[in-house]
Image (tube, rainbow, N blue to C red; front, side):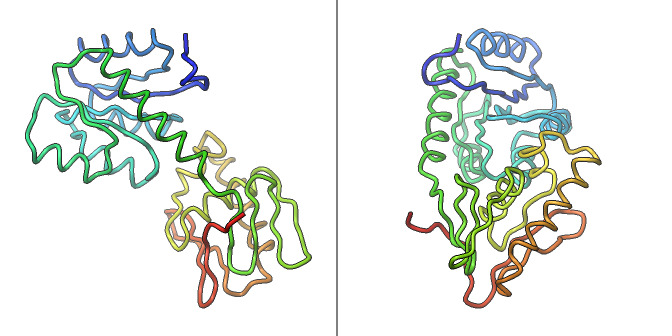
Length: 244
């Protein structure tokens, strides 16, 4: 049963090549209320990540076909906000440093107690929730003001009420001003599934957002062929959190 700290459903991707340890840890986490998907090598883990909707990744460092560090790097290319922790039999300072340089939220050395893993998971999830709760709802996009909660895009006296999908997509784009928003990440985050029809639907919403933003020539959504989109702010335009 979930505790008060874990009221929402949590999906965990667990990558561990030791079959016995992996199954034992998965069973323990599921008994604690976490939906846990187990993979036994890095390539399987990456393919599973692309197909799922996860809140946390737990990665063994030494795995066949793709090690945990490489897997973490590939995951971060798709979703730089995804929290993850490493499991390792090593206790070398270089490994620990490399893990944290990749943005790891925690690092636990084998052997470990199952309870300790759960305590660390809960600490990570509390930090992630705390960060999200502090996100500023009102953002400046060039000459536009965007209220992410009310889903209203305004410039001067003109206001437009965005649809939920439009608002979610513009929020992701504004989170990554002048940076790439990966198509796969946007589809997984908003549409859950990155199939052909959802991909075409996202293209339609991108076109709608371009129309909403066309009154400011400093704001542009550009295609990055085969990869995704960028919200580009030029000259005096800027995308930032605004005091609300």
